[in-house]
Figure 1 (tube, rainbow, N blue to C red):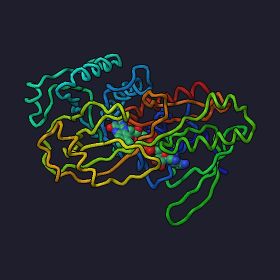
Figure 2 (figure 1 turned 30 degrees about the vertical axis):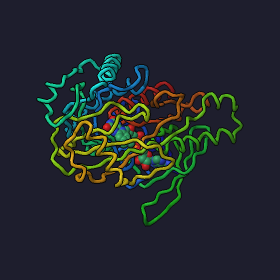
Figure 3 (figure 1 turned 180 degrees about the horizontal axis):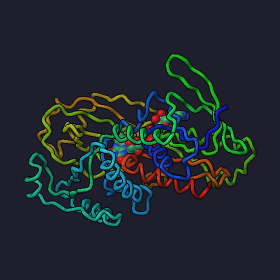
Figure 4 (figure 1 turned 90 degrees about the horizontal axis):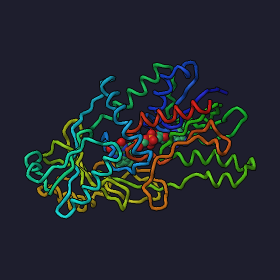
Length: 389
Ligand SMILES: Cc1cc2nc3c(=O)[nH]c(=O)nc-3n(C[C@H](O)[C@H](O)[C@H](O)COP(=O)(O)OP(=O)(O)OC[C@H]3O[C@@H](n4cnc5c(N)ncnc54)[C@H](O)[C@@H]3O)c2cc1C
């Protein structure tokens, strides 16, 4: 049976960033590190189904991990893009308010400043008309640190850099069960390349769970082993696995002319813990709208064409000359949200030392701004590892 020092489950942007980060750390130079990814290639789930926006860190609760890691991650990501020539553009974004909504915009500015985002500018109607003539809004908050990135190039670069340092990427490899052993974990996996389906097993000392939407399932595999071993249920309850909700976000491409030079966001949809249907420009200049937010029980990436009507109504509030016939179904992504008592869902990154598994690192609830935060998340994982190894 193959033996590894570190297994990273999940080859999305977070798993790849963790692999990159560890592969550069001299403490892990001679360690065997492998990424196990169920899909045929890296980043085929949530990491290729997002807005590709580098967020500034405006929205998140000040004490949250999202606020901290978004701000750190944003700067690390811009530096990475420059260093490894990843296509990106710091085009800036406008969060717009309609008449009567100005106080909400001011509250947003206050929260951003508390988070350490100190370069926002309030823009009045007259100036807005000059910089974005197609925009209808009474005022806007301008965020110059917001940008866009070619996330595929970024993920490819993370993987190439990690592989150059000896990390192995095992595609079409699904972790099916976990057994606890004295010195770590024994994983049962299936390697299925579409032609051949082969069961296989491996051992690892450290297990890092970056499985995105599958992270809670994976953690439950290890926790159910604890139950079998008669682990004290009181401690387990105090450190129980969180509950997960799926929030689906659909996008529509716009085949009409793009009149905007900035990303345009309405006020956030706090009821659904989402940013509202925004206008995103990709690096080729194409315009798309989304994502909306819809609670789902399962993973379903289809886009309902009839939603074009709702999208048109929502977007026309800030882009009144939008031609609804030019909205074409694009793609959808699923946000992993953790059930909380009314508070917005936050990232959870923890080693499971409280249940006696310090070498299991779980990452839960890595929804937006997970792409922006990826390198800071990787840094957090690296610190947790340093504390426990
Ligand atoms: C609609 C939407 C818009 C967003 N917009 C932005 C944005 O503009 N900016 C931003 O910063 N963030 C954004 N995000 C958030 C960002 O996309 C995610 O935080 C990020 O992609 C999460 O990466 P991940 O690696 O954790 O998950 P994933 O990309 O889903 O990767 C997890 C991987 O684990 C694999 N896996 C799961 N279970 C197993 C198993 N048992 N065995 C092997 N492999 C397994 C999966 O196949 C998958 O590839 C958005 C998210 C959504 C849904």
